Image 1 (tube, rainbow, N blue to C red):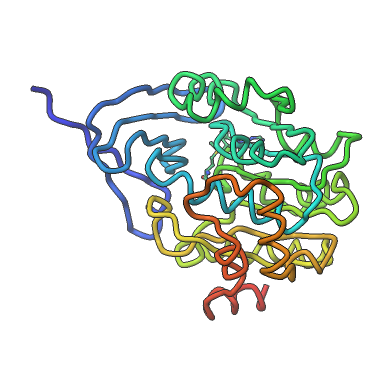
Image 2: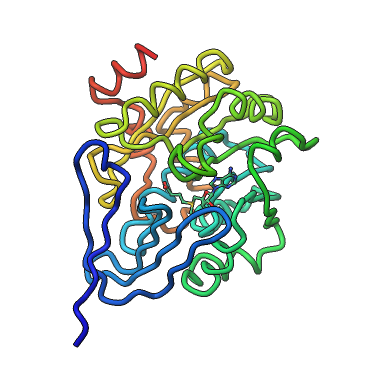
Length: 289
Ligand code: SAM
């Protein structure tokens, strides 16, 4: 019997730290035009996708990140119709967005067609409901170019990107955030995958610094995702309307009830409101930015 392969996440090599997972089976591996992609079966985390040595999604804990990146901005906004997803090729975010019946159109701009093709094969639980929903539009292309050129305006922009390396690096620049502001509708909000502050403080500080120059409200909220190692994950928050983040628990509860109280496994109205209460060390990073 061949020895099972151990697969390392190399994202934190500079910090002298590696998470390594024993693969029960390698399900898929290739070098795409943009990045190295490996999907393997893990006995505890289920299917795990890594791009360029960074864990992207696992079937066991995906619900935490996907629900918090989606339901927080949409319920805070309260009347979102046009939603833009940058990245998100596994379609986990799109699947959550489409649970909101008020949303009229969801546009996903993913740079790597191979990620979507392979997600159709290996993550049907995301892709099947998404690709059969007429409100969903899939665009293959660079998110930077799309937001710089589009004539459309979006109520909610969700940046479900890789880390600031390779094709994802441009999605953490001031130029990109300024272009997102340009195609954001009045009263709109953008949320961003912004890393794990304990391990990647520079990533959050840099984004918040740009947000403060470009948006009325610049902040982040947090959640803990087991395979995004290092404690709280930060989700960047940039809005043209300061009031969205102050939306009360009672109003969030009412909006959730009107949305049909669809099933969630992490997000609740209470968790939503609490997620903006930041631990002091993250609060300090946000203030200093
Ligand atoms: N949740 C994951 C995380 O937090 O690391 C991200 C998941 S999603 C798979 C990330 C996607 O962003 C990848 O499919 C990648 O191809 C895409 N991506 C990276 N750079 C991009 C760019 N410039 N424009 C559009 N999509 C991009």
